[in-house]
Length: 383
Image 1: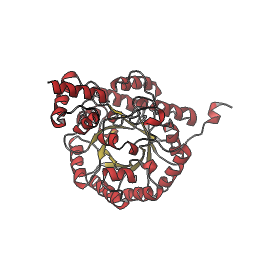
Image 2: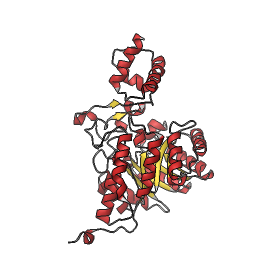
Image 3: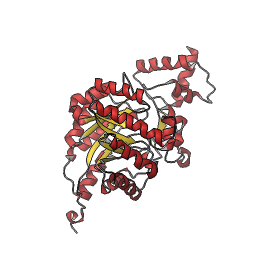
Image 4: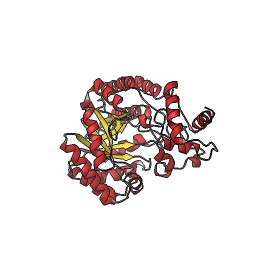
């Protein structure tokens, strides 16, 4: 049988957003510079990616401001989207102020939907509070004229009886799109179809899928979501990203070409894109997904180190791996405290952290893991 006869043509081919400059930039130890951001964004748009997701904003003076501005200069604010953290009404207002200052037009709200993540980040697992926070954040953004995507962070582990009312309320509040985040890789493709089908059945819904690749099924789950009616897929160049990586863009686009006969994308840029992003991320020439790599259980956020069960598909120890921190410039006292626990090295963390931060800046921000921080603490004692 000829290949064309085997292809399953999609009634509505998916639109693609790319989170390389957001998700992988928050991968432990990975920090893209503005020049790399501009080049990656330009190549993504040339390939046919509609939205380049860049940076994270929680309030004033965002650390990702230079990345956002460089991306805007390269592809324009209409082709980019920035993630905004959501905790409460006052914090959201400050984040929106910063987004306006940076000229952002498309925002994506990161809102934790599972009971476990809501309890950690919103202070309560209450579904009522979750919905109220989302409604408030969406209304504030729409009143200011933003295009709003809102997420279900840890959405894949959020039961339908909690998730569907939340998504329904978000669209009623005026949101333009909902992103299901498979923050913790959890679903099979057939389970993903069921979850997405519940969401696409919501009146007026536009659904995006963002899968992580710890189990190696991010592309399969993304295609399954499209079969169930999802309109957007979020991917990253090379699949780089947190917790085993994300849906890899090249594999996704070539799968759309081979399996579904989708010829909308210029695939000739993919190899250059992968090399550029991997070098910029400090990953060499290849990124391996899955649970056995040094990156799979590496973190640079204290909450992930202190509450790993909320973020891990399976424990690091189960596959003979170990969790660690990897950080360059995003050093905090909480990370230092975690690194020094049970080490026998006693320092004043409040004094040591700025000392180490200054040394990092002077030395070109080399990668720090737990052992490197412990050795630096010994140096600090001697100094």
